Image (tube, rainbow, N blue to C red):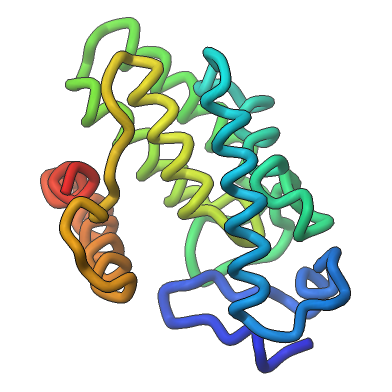
Length: 194
């Protein structure tokens, strides 16, 4: 199964065991996997926005990942148990998520940041924790969108407002995340609304 699941340098590589968690047996090309994941994510997106949700909760966040990938990966919605090139140590995932949830609830209750900045700080911390084997960026962007909408703002465009190639959008997104890692959220805020 290896070979057609090549990952670029900024993507989360999967272990052999995680690759064995692929549910459909007919997948032979990376493009087929991408299409299947995208269909699953679109269904989860419709579900997530179908009614008001408590985005800032651990059960919802796990359930969101499960819904986004449950037709593709057996481990959807389960925290990773292996170490990654990104994210925190796997044994710290649950504690770090609980801390983020408490922080985000405090930010909201005290209007600590603008609505966009709050949603993007939440998104960035989710990415930094990297709780799942894969799909963390897509999952955390959807969670950020849901939190923005929950606060009365529109969804983010995530660099799609300007007609750019997917490669350019990804490059800009990664650069904005790296700036946020250095405590500069301005590029991420600009990117998310571009």
